[in-house]
Every structure is written in C-alpha cells, then in structure tokens.
Amino acid sequence: MSRRPPKEAPDPIDLHVGQRLKARRVGLRVSQSEIGKVLGVTFQQIQKYENGANRIGASNLYRLAQALNVNVSYFFDDMPSSAKLTTLSPQPTTEFSHDPMTQPESIKLVHNYFRIATPSVRNRVFQLVKSIADAEELPTNEG
Image (cartoon, rainbow, N blue to C red; front, top):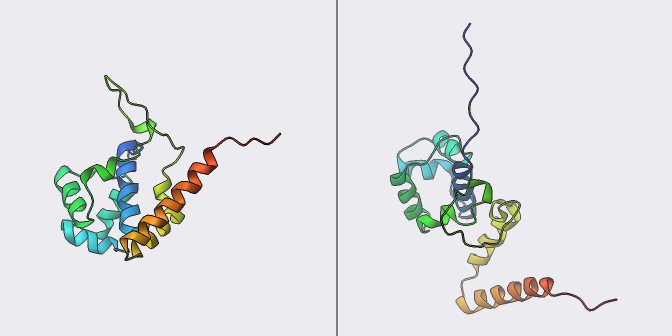
C-alpha cells in the first residue's frame, strides 16, 4: 500500500486571498455555486480557493474582482505580516493579529452598512463609528 506524501500547508498569501474572497462573497450573500458559474468551475473549487488549498490564477482573480465589484487589490488588502515578502523599502502598516474582515460580525456590519440607501446617512454612520474608535485610542486622565 503506497502512502501519499504529506501535503504542504497552504501558502499564507493563498490563505489570505481565499479569506478575502469568502468575506466578500458572504457579505454579498452570494453562493459558492454562483461564483463558480462566473469562473466556469464547481463550488468545490471555490471552497478550495477559499480555504487556500488551491491558488487563484490571475485571470480568475480578475474575473472575481469584476463579479464582486471590487478592485483586484481588495484581495491583498490587510495582508498579515506572515504572508508579506521582504521589500527594499518597507512601509509601516497597521497590523492585526487576525484579519478582522473575516469575522462574522465584521461581515454583517459591512453588509448592513451598505444596505443603508442614503449616502449622507451612510456617511454619518461611518463618522459615528470612526469617532467612537478614535475616542477609544485617546489616553484617559484618570488617576
């Protein structure tokens, strides 16, 4: 009986791109089958993309960006430091121990935010959340 060699762990970049795909797809309430039809692949292939088991080729990444109404760069936003390559001129970024956009709470928040039809109301909600977050960062004068 022959045994398969152990599979390598998915590349951190492929994991991140897959998580971003899933977050956007779930946020838009689009099924894996619907995304698969856009690319001409099965829902199982979309599952493999989302869990990082298979890499998404450049042409399919472009098609996904078009179908999900995002720029291709969306899939690489907030890349964790473990997935970044060494560059000649690194730029400081805000680091998270995890990608907050993969959390169910974040996905629901973004989905509901975009359900607000009036741009001015949506902007006021954005400003409210931003001001609360900014206030959390301020040092307190207690003690």
